[in-house]
Picture 1 (tube, helix red, strand yellow):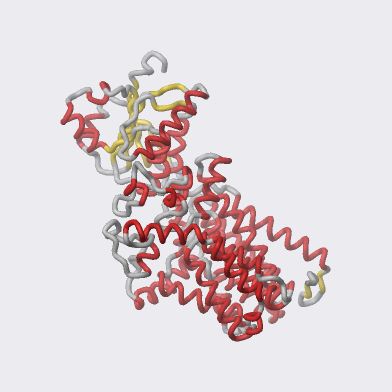
Picture 2 (cartoon, rainbow, N blue to C red):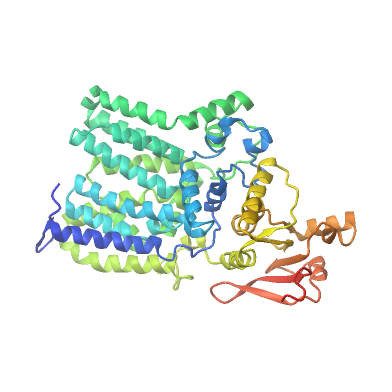
Length: 548
């Protein structure tokens, strides 16, 4: 493949093309990895990252229990092969990064960011293979800076992984059918894609249609069938998990049971499946498309589609749109369209060379739009012209600052008094944390956190309940606290060994019982990056009297 680029007035040498590509990748890395911890954990990334810490299929979802809860304390070996609602690969990858970088926003999100950068490079390769090096460079440049892909690369959800495998599988497929390369690497990629998220099954109708229409001779190739068998082997942990789940309780996992019309008694509600009728989904499509892309990129993409003559991109977009019609046009699902929009725009601008003067201002605007809506704490300007609804997917409410407060308070400390847990697998993890802390010489600390307010469930799970479930730090809401005092008498918690109390309140109407508990205590305020007081903490320390 020649990397030489032919622009409107001049030709760029292969060495210069490589330098431009490196610059594109560096920009994409800055926009994805830079300031990655910003933005609170208020979307579904929490429910992956939380479970990835200990590869634990448990996140306190009372209406969506898991096999670990059903079979505790004797857990069958197969329960560790997958998770009740998603394949395991994202959890495995995040687990490794959390082991290396700690239980932080950065560690949870870093794999998504790195795969986002890799996806930009894959778009360059695809564009070069489908059109030309110049079209590939334009496509990669646009994807590197456009908001929708920057956003999905900066949260710890599965879609950045899915997009990476969609693009890698597409590149390997096209190399196999066009250049007679082996299908075996494609089989490995397909297996990993399926281990990432079931949405990756969309690759099979895409490739199947292309084979039937344009590459029927490939069906005679042995390596094609070997690659499919290899994909099946890689995906086998999920297959075994589902077979054993069906054998044991009579239904498949959360996603497959929904697809096959099963209604398990354990899952009477289906979070994420409230997507409305097909008409309602169609009505939501364009507003959400506008809410998750810059209007400049979206307008350019829609214009380019009218001139699209490339079967691969058209067929891929067609099946992805069909998938979105089935699962609903959530912001995260729309991100799967963006790389193919970028390829369409790259081909369009490369052919319409008289429009190339638009590229520089478009790229500059996209950089501003992405920084304004993902890196800046709070965007400036009105939506959709300068700001976007996508910012609320990781908005800066102040939970990061609340989490930082308790990380500092509990640094090099272990709980000296804990609550008895309902499940033995949780108690085991807590005992292991405390044992490690004792070996490291951490200070025993008899602390109890009492919360009051309507906390975002995801943010509270990551910033507070994570400390309780994995580390043993006791946390109760004020209603539970008061109830146990009424049932067991004044001084119940002190007799249980607690001497240091943190009362945490969100910005809600004052609760009379909470006011009584915090009477005479000095408030400490947790501010969001805008400087607004969003949480109030009152402290009562008996163990530290005379030490502070």
